[in-house]
Length: 269
Image 1 (cartoon, rainbow, N blue to C red):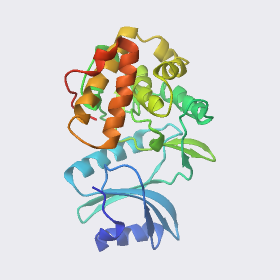
Image 2 (image 1 turned 90 degrees about the vertical axis):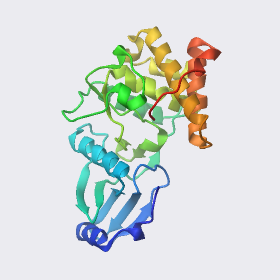
Image 3 (image 1 turned 180 degrees about the vertical axis):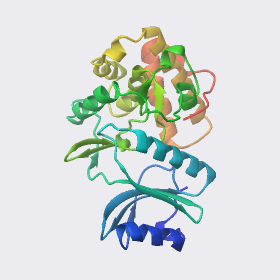
Image 4 (image 1 turned 45 degrees about the vertical axis):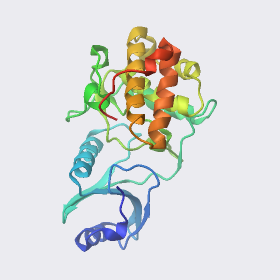
């Protein structure tokens, strides 16, 4: 759960002030994996700060810090600084000034996303511990395994269009997998942005990793992902989970028929 910047202990805010000057924080409007996520501006500059003090929050943020320090793709914001004080882990990322990407059909932002996919599809996973596909999504298939760096959460909220191009933020779910895993994980976000399942697949098919993947493997991924999100949505009223259940179901139905969205639950987000 998010808390206000003013709730941070003085030992923490003083150390932040040493780095950026007297700070003014503007909370982010999306995301909930860190207790604090805010644009922090001071006389010495501007950064985007995530902070956590719960067990889950610290584990997640420490993972994102480790990945952020290891990832070298130009689309990933740099880690500016980090420290721990009074039970808090504080991580400052390069601030990305811009707007969230528009992934709707025909949007020019799709070309920016396509450029990123071409880069990351050829980027080896860094030599740090990362999720494997099953650990990331709760189900497995041998074809998912690979040595490529995969972001896995390319929602519009994590894609910032800046004057210098596309920046991809929130690497908290970075995974070591086959290149097509990234494309399959993107499908429901394209559908949510207004693409039909067929349009989404046609757009993804520009990438060899998609075209070379066994259609039965894509059927399996679509089916299991729809089952997972249907089970999760049945246990909550959270709108975003019901959206994901609807979008993954549309893709699974397109590939294998109406029954594919029903079945056993998955285990992770």
